[in-house]
Length: 264
Image (cartoon, rainbow, N blue to C red):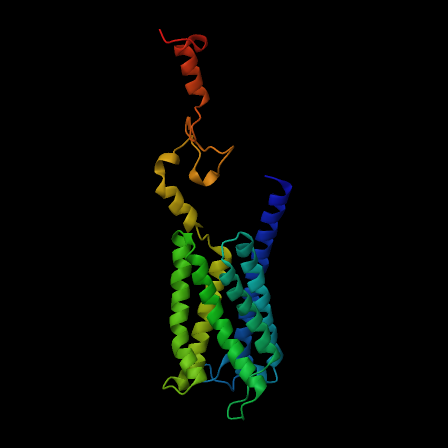
């Protein structure tokens, strides 16, 4: 292993540890808000309502720490090129949305709608929607139990977003339970973030399918189709395709034909 690869592996592991620690800190801060601000109901009030309390700085800190955790946990995933560009864009929207909703606080309940409140509202929806979408785009390019776990978790988060968005953006019979639904969605997305940052997603689906499509060229001791071409001809076992013969074949020919003469 080269020094560069070793340094990258150490950086990835350190990033995961920092990301896990930051996620734990964010969860503790969110839990602390529920204890300190007892006047808000976890069933009816949203998590963003804590930002309007005297302890609102704890909410902002928790969200920013979660954004930093996301960068640390998703960074190694993107460096391994396990995500397509569209998935990377989704992860960027998740992190950026978390930052934006701390800069633009929510409108108080019953207050007139403001531009700041609208930005907060849509930043929250975009952030909660972007992470599971990015996870699905990543998982569909991988094969393995880890990819299936990530895909199922992301799908559950997207399904749970439907009642939340309907109650958050419009009138809905679930409006009285908006806070409870939002907390369930947020917890599910934190779990999804931890899975993306720690679980092995498996081999790339395209590479796996290519290897399965040509089993005869992927046996032990032979070069796979994924290994590439050399010198315009591809080696598979003892035979070199492209009209050339291998060294074993040349020795056999030399034994059968003396000095290029006729066979006896």
